[in-house]
Amino acid sequence: MIEKVTKTVELHLLKLSNTKAEALSELYESYLVGANIILDELKVREYTSKYQLQTATYNQVRALGLHSQQAIDVLKDVWIQRKKVERIEVFNKLAIRYNVPRSASLNVTKRGNPILSLATLKGRIHAPVYQDKGYERFQSLTDDGYSFTELQLLKKDGDWVIHVALKKVFEVDNGANVLGIDIGTNTLAAITVYDPLHRKVLKQLYLGRDIYQVKRDIGVRRSKLQSRGSEKAAVALRKLRGYEHNFTKTRCFEIAHQIVALAKEYNCTIAIENLKHLNKSKLSRKSDRKVKRMPYAMFVAALQAVAFQNGIAVVKVNPRYTSKTCSKCGERGKRTGAAFKCACGFISNSDRNASCNIALRAVKADTPKMLDQNPQGRMSVSTSLRVDENERL
Image 1 (cartoon, rainbow, N blue to C red):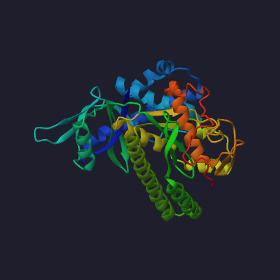
Image 2: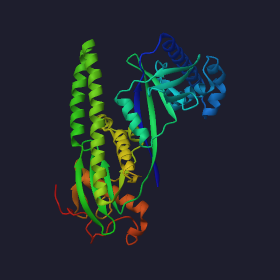
Image 3: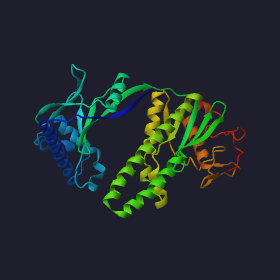
Image 4: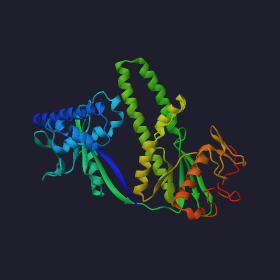
């Protein structure tokens, strides 16, 4: 099985001449005007396909001086956000998308200095790239077999920066065992390592309990700063936002590495819940706030990237009733807070129980022969599903 890993690297440009800086500024302004033309068209008329929208707006956008590829790229940027056009009054900033090598290329001079060629309204310009840690990481990844066909130019704190999405294909295999992960609000990852051949739990543990606690404390701090409304508080809020993002991302990757190390040790396929539409769920105000703090997308992206690079498959299963179904008998039980109870007598932590069910669903989906004696995907009551099935909370 083949999976693709994408890593984004930020490159910085050295100081540009006035002519080159003006060329980029003119392009950026035209790009924004083109985006707002397309935005206005989406607000007054409904389009069912990107091609219809392109037919209606292409000539107007091209009249701004944008090249054909740039006109198509700005259309893509707006089309991606079509479902929330009513909430967007106007585009004040966007990243300019470049196709490599059609409208941009990254080369090295005879002296070994990196230089970026970018298409503008007045032709191509050549911008020198700063050889910082970002560029060193870019070189390391390209030397390791990563390639790129697109980059984005954007303004960050008044400076021009380049985001390059590098991609590489990895071959992954299914393991003999399954590592099920229940992704939650209080505990990021409740884990069960399950052996489908012997119908036995090999290991269970919790990871990432500190993330919710830190984000909760940050939320309290954010509320206090927002209530002040001063310029000093606004600066502190920006720093706090950056700290929260960096902390969460670092912890997600640390936990992902721990999980992958465990999967390699036990020869596992990793199974997670498919919570794609989680933010659309109708929840109470308190529950919705807790769910919003859960870094599901960031964690899954980190887990897949680390797993694929190590040749480990990651599968997604239906999350429906995973925390309310008994992992021992398969019947619907009762969850009260952190506790799960079933009429069969099974009592467990609800996150542990859910991670068991996730592992079982992955087994049922990928290896039906392992469950031929129990076609409903349930474990035999006479056979222990868990090594701690008699444990009480």
